[in-house]
Amino acid sequence: MRRLNRKKTLNLMKELDAFPKVPESYVETSASGGTVSLIAFTTIAFLTIMEFMVYRDTWMKYEYEVDKDFTSKLRINIDITVAMRCQYVGADVLDLAETMVASADGLIYEPVPFELTPQQKELQRMLQLIQSRLQEEHSLQDVIFKSAFKSASTALPPREDNSLQSPDACRIHGHLYVNKVAGNFHITVGKAIPHPRGHAHLAALVSHESYNFSHRIDHLSFGELIPGIINPLDGTEKIASDHNQMFQYFITVVPTKLHTYKISAETHQFSVTERERVINHAAGSHGVSGIFMKYDISSLMVTVTEEHMPFWQFLVRLCGIIGGIFSTTGILHGFGRFVAEIIFCRFRLGSYRSTSGPLPDGHTSNHLPLITDNNTH
Ligand SMILES: *[C@@H]1O[C@H](CO)[C@@H](O)[C@H](O)[C@H]1NC(C)=O
Image (cartoon, rainbow, N blue to C red; front, side, top):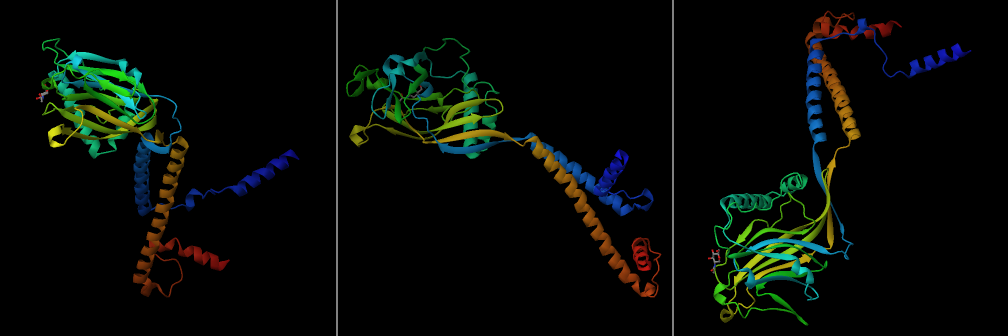
């Protein structure tokens, strides 16, 4: 009984066979088939290698959504050197409500020489080169995202010669936390003193002749500090031609969530437009000399995710390549033979019209016997 069942299932499985075997003696190989197979295998190998390279590669996916997080604080990282003595300048932040942000005292004022050392200049030039390339080619941004944390910090190295030059400039660096609303970070003459209706800078003691708002931005970023990421203003250097000059930067900050295979971070990208003008009240150009950074926060949030082809997709595509090329070349080969047969038949039809038996020609003989076989049945 069990043996019978087994035999039945075996037969059933035989019926289901989609790959019926043809005895070796019925199979014929030909030179043209060999050539086609060779081409097919080469194409398969080539496409498989290409596909593997695509599989190994990763890309960045950008998604946009409305930023719902408006309660958290925004961190501003600053490293700016101004060509003025530290006791003459002050930096602070005003936000949209015109209230002075108290945490501005988190900034450190350090007297330094304005001139960079040759080694530092080299790095600055490299940064500026990357910046100009970034403006032309946006896809470079992806590379920078991918290499975040992998590459060394882009901060300037410390001076190699200690205090050869007397410090004539002030390096203002550190970080501060502000509300997530538009605001204005500025560096002007005199230390800021809070005032019931805003704040004032004590500038009376500083002579106009010592005003010089030439500055170098070594780093300006918003949010978490991520080494390896190059921000749009890093490496900027501005030389003031006049004592009373105003530099303005209009910054739009875009909250960005970065998920790569190396890191996961919440950072902020920004775009900036800049403007500078000489303050001359007599000529109608009013204002306060200094460095002003007006920032605004975008309500859209970008999520940047590094993506990769899943392994199953790679397998499916591989099967598609192998099977597709196999059957396509098979069809083409068959079609080629068919065309060749028609052409050869035309040429020889006249001499063989009367005979219905197998043709002596190698091309057609393996087809015609089948037809005659069928006729006899
Ligand atoms: C300000 O300082 C820079 C750097 O030391 C210098 O090149 C520039 O001429 C100065 N500008 C003025 C108006 O003094």
